[in-house]
Structures are given as C-alpha cells and as structure tokens.
Image 1 (tube, rainbow, N blue to C red):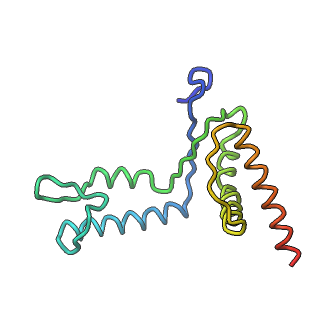
Image 2: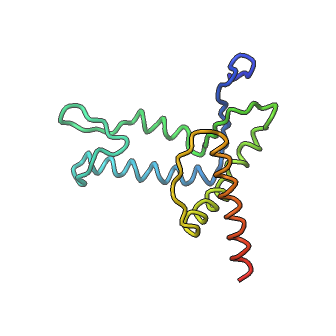
Image 3: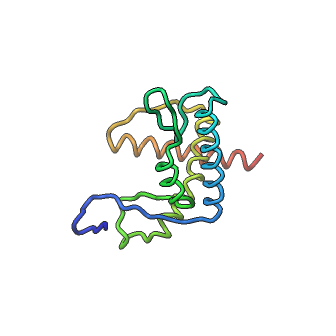
Length: 147
C-alpha cells in the first residue's frame, strides 16, 4: 500500500469502476478474442493479435491473459504523485476528465495560430512560452466569439 511517509515522491494510483466502461471493455475483449481465434484457425492472416500465444509453428488462444484482462473489465486507473491529503481520489479522477478541455484548447491554438513546436528546457522559458500561448488563445477565443 502506498504511504507518503515511506514512499516519498512515489506515484499513487486511483482506480474507478464504471458499468459503461465494463460494457465497452467486454465488447472490445470479445472482438479481440474472436480475431485471435480467426488468426489461430487460419481465417485471417495478420500480425499476431492480442491473446494469441505462439509455440514454434503452432498458435493457440492465451486463455490466461484473456482471463486476466476480463478480471479488470470496467476499471480505469489514474496515476498521480499528489498525496491523498492534498487531493482526494474523486478530485484526481475529475481532473483527468477535465483534461479534454485543455487538449481541445491546445489543438485549436496550434491549428488556428499556426504554432510551431518549441523545445524549451529551462523553467522560465517554458513558463514564458505557455503564458504567450494562453494569451494568444484568449485573444483568439474573444475574436472568434465576437464574429
């Protein structure tokens, strides 16, 4: 078990279960199992898919790996280095769910502003670059909204 006093600087995992994710995971695993069986039976010629075990020239279904994957159906893990005393598990999950907003903003800013990659290594340079990008993004959003 992770303990911040013993494992200073270590990562913490937060797990969440979702019935919706479980349904999607089960569907995906079934499709992967069917594809593996098709490759094993020679119905499909493809690179070796997940759950196919190769022993010499023979191929068989890796039932151990499939069973292990089915045990974690519906679970999603979130990793952070912030202790539970600072950020509770629910907030970690909520923060990850909000990441799409940030990612969408960066996609928009790169395409709309025709931004080029920047390779900064020093903290001051990185912070200055992010400040400029966010200022340009804010101006761009205001300009788009006023049209």
